Length: 292
Image (cartoon, rainbow, N blue to C red; front, side, top):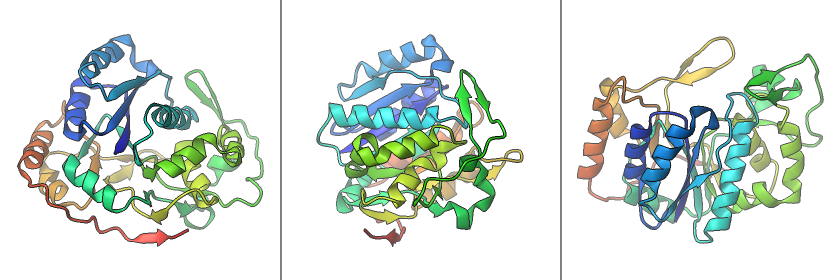
């Protein structure tokens, strides 16, 4: 069984298409609506989910890019999923503007064949991305709807190697239990609470510095085309119908991002493909990087 956490802040109709594309009666679904998005969006999605007994809403929280609030939402989602259902084996987080590239039967079969693998990008931050070390060494505060970054520096956690990747992951129940409940995880939460863009390093750093996981595969199984967006970050390019063949041929399980208000054809093409494809198993070609 898979436990999904879906993060939504706009486009309710597009979210509904995503939900239907990943729905399976044996999975468990939790949906978080950004509190900044307003009550109307939350009410719309709550009414939609009422028809699905294995879907719930996570209490809304304001989500701020660059802030620890994004990590906190993930942790609260994991904790609620752990409490509500004891049968799921894999956790997958998605954005409301993601979409699957494989059928749910395919994804369930694939993960069932690899029950102890963690699909996450986790690189040594000092070695691979030294330009981002200021994110963890310079203190950052999230307050209301703003990020404050005073010129205050600190040392990194003693005996810990910082790691960095993306927000997206497919991880085991074992890891979720550790990061949510283990005493050893508390100091990471305290430290990263005052880090910038913590959602791209917190989970990686916890995983890579503790014996709390299965075999780590350096692949989050998401097809994302990262393009520059200012001086400090990259952003995912919005896929269009020109990308359809590439998307359908990909070994990845999911892709992001899509915007039906800009190009609805690409989503309709993928939907038709998923409805037509036979439930044949083919392993994504990602290789294990670390075994503990």
